[in-house]
Length: 123
Image (cartoon, one colour):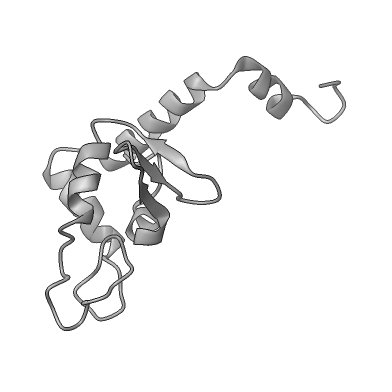
């Protein structure tokens, strides 16, 4: 899953939230900060940017959506993303929770001490 994000947030991404760097690195800005997209996801994302679906229709010739939908001005439906993942054998909720667990494991313990400290305990 894409950094543990819900399908609704993934569906609503725009091409302005993705950057391909000169060194072929890929950055994604799902909220406030740019995040490096690791391999193996960076390569297919770079490829996808050059051939997004639903761009050859009169409805979407200049769509800014990363995942344009079939209706003019609309992005793909989040349920469609979840359905495609499930049909590919990806348990969507379990994958999302697993991603969050992996991200949490990578954070420095000092971060957790500050975040989990009770309001009355010193940082």
